[in-house]
Amino acid sequence: MAGGVTGGDSATWSDRFEQGLHPVIERFNASIGFDIRLLQEDLDGSIAHARMLAECGVIQVEEADQLVSGLEQVRQEAASGEFQPGLADEDVHFAVERRLIALLGPVGKKLHTGRSRNDQVGTDLRLWLRRRLDELEQYLLGFQRALLDQANLHSNTLIPGYTHLQRAQPLCLAHHLLAYVEMVERDRQRMADLRKRLNLSPLGAAALAGTPVPIDRRSTAMALGFDGIYANSLDAVSDRDFTVEFSAAASLVMVHLSRLAEEVIFWASEECGFVRLTDRCATGSSLMPQKKNPDVPELVRGKCGRVFGHLQGLLTMIKGLPLAYNKDFQEDKEALFDVVATTSQCLEAMTILLQEGLSFRTERLEAAVAADYSNATDVADYLVAKQVPFREAYQLVGAVVKHCLQEGVLLRELTLERWQKFHPAIEADLFEALTPRNVVAARTSEGGTGFDRVHEQLAIWNKRLGLADQVV
Ligand code: ARG
Image (cartoon, rainbow, N blue to C red; front, side):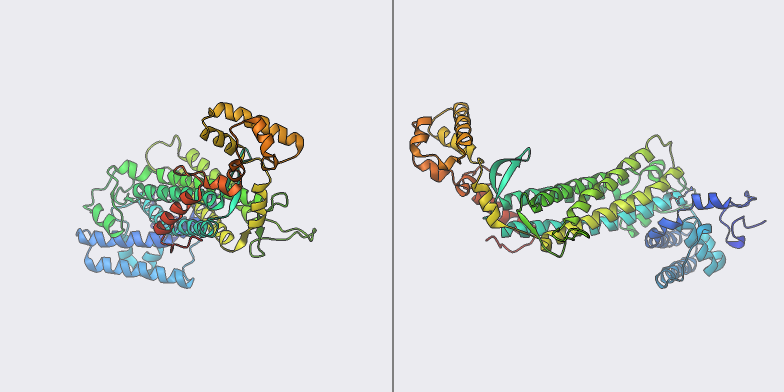
């Protein structure tokens, strides 16, 4: 039967095929169910390709015009819901080509000159991810700004600092939040960096070896906003490094989000009580009327599994693949789509949580830092200033803390006489030095939590992220 096996005139395969696909295999093989999401990019790539073919004299200018208007018509049909490809179309690339041939007749059959679905799919996927990276940058920036807004509100608020989840030293809350601002900055840099390697055009590599058709790869690359072209046609159609690089960078975004999520869950617990969740982002229990649950940060923490899993899946899918294109690559799409969707949603949700989902209970925080031994290092530092060697001071303060624990008192509750029995160099000014606010203020080393240092950092970040200087 001339015209192939799967659809009369609009056949997919060459006449070498005699039998149609088994229906189960047809379903198994098809990617149209998910790669339809590449439709806009597929149309963009095809339009650039058609114009280039005319530029190079491979087809007539009028033919290119027809192809372009046919492709634009497919775009409109998709917008109005008329374009409804089915399983028989296999994938988005075939679906578009078929519709074009149905619309234009023989001219439509000229579009695929000098290209293959192998370079086509690589082009579409890069264009798609490039757009998503631009959106993701906005989500990251929004999240970073929400962190900075909270930091600006709390430039004078104290919070216990932990190591091993044991009270360590008091902190300025803004300093704690700015640590996340730094993490997000690295995330933004990583995304910007991988975008450079992603932004090369594989189009024109054809199936694997290039083409005898006198095409101009640089013309399509430029039309599509790529920074350059892949130098090697085999590499062009086989490279999926960008899917791994992106998923790894997204995994780190999720790691950062999950760390903040975990802290919020801890802070919102009754045991801790450092934040109050507002009704906007918390849910109740179907059974226990008193409950208010931190579902948003819990979901963010839980969704890490999907993103890390996709990273692992992509690495495993690519490993050991011989050059050049292999159908295994079709598996990259759902993973990439889900990594983008999950990471974007989590960033959005955590941004809203910071903006209107929680408030810090400053009185509770103030009380918490006043009622622990997290100023113990400061006694040692006080003695160091009096020329006592640090190690000796450290041992001595250990003995003081032991004594206080036995007596059930805090360091500042010891009398001066008692202190002087521990060390004669201790004077009344120790008590001032031990207040949580002074403990924090004293940490003036660069990058430390001292209020002056934190205010400097807030000013730098406010300028960098375009927020007015609103430090309180
Ligand atoms: N649907 C395919 C994919 O996602 C398109 C490329 C198919 N190329 C091929 N030679 N079978 O990778």
